[in-house]
Image 1 (cartoon, rainbow, N blue to C red):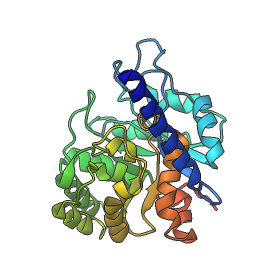
Image 2: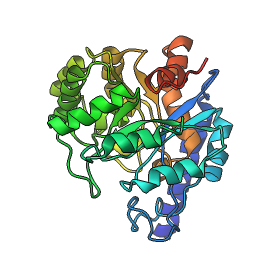
Image 3: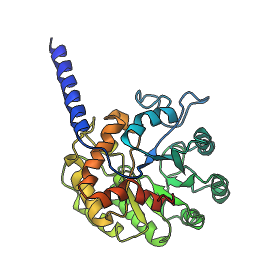
Length: 315
């Protein structure tokens, strides 16, 4: 009997959450570009490096048709894929996967910046106009990145020379991660740097760390740095993640105050959103924050800033 009551309560909470999500409006914008999703096929021979096999939600094929089905009803008009695999061949695999599909407007590739042939690999990928940049990340079989390493600086200058962007994943990196991006942005001031997932902040519902705020204030002085307000569900220490914008607002406020309306960018981190809600709920969550900032800010967040940072040339 107790189990039945608990199940009914959980179902009631889920229904109320869904109802609350649906009451919040979707964005009213000319374009809407999701700058952060992952596509992969766990059924491929040899499997995939990510996600882990024990993740029952994520470890299954996540392919274009499914994403189009869950996202187009929100008004989304374009997508940038971020390659999560460290395997060089998977960059071309995903480009081939979305060939001739205009919904997928870009790829942020995964090319190890320690590779001796980094420049030739970049130039090879750049033959496809949708290749817009590279994400630097630690983990998998890649060497931990030292952003002060002369080889790393050299590789990132190659991105700058080739008019490509640099995404940086710093999940859980805290204050030091913000300082690393700050330092890099000053060393290569013309490289377009996009910090992923609110610079990896761990949302815990508490007041924001003053040292983190100070680091973000310094970071914001670099006009070549953007930040994705993305992956909020995954960055929550409480799981399933809350759907109330108030839970995330104090952190987003810090980023808004220091990077402003011109340098915050929309991204979902689908399919990771599945662990805490559907795609629609995530779009409505971030729109609740940015729609209150006015139409101009909303347009910039949902597409104009992405167009600038990734050179998409949207009008």
